[in-house]
Image (tube, rainbow, N blue to C red; front, side, top):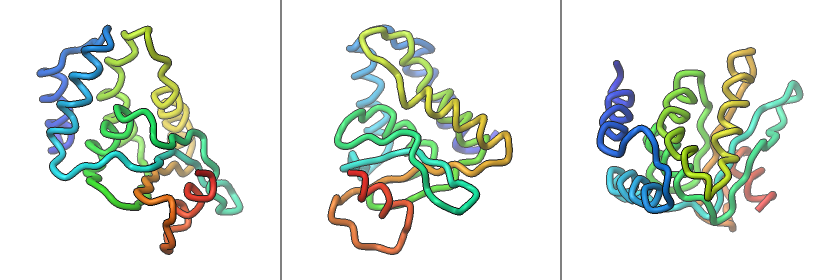
Length: 154
């Protein structure tokens, strides 16, 4: 078991296997945020694939919304703040899915990020490339082409 697996297991043991109310989701989100010192909600974040022509194609973008999936993915990746893109492997996606899945019990929300992660897992299992992308500043001028692509969408 990796350190990240242990973290996810410990968090789920504390938070429970289902978060069926808005209050439980709020509690889970705040607990995940507390576990990541210096974490900040990005201005935008998203999940993408890289096609055969090496173009970044976003399957899901979030601009200033949905902090729970952002902090769940950040927990798995160890991302605290700032612009960054991460290549997602099957194990990382499985951990993120496992960490966010209890939120599905709450029918007050749809869960599009979780659905996207499951689709990306199929892409990765089939040999494709998937990315998680975080953008802290909508005026980003750096060299990461995935972050720049997200900025252009935001």
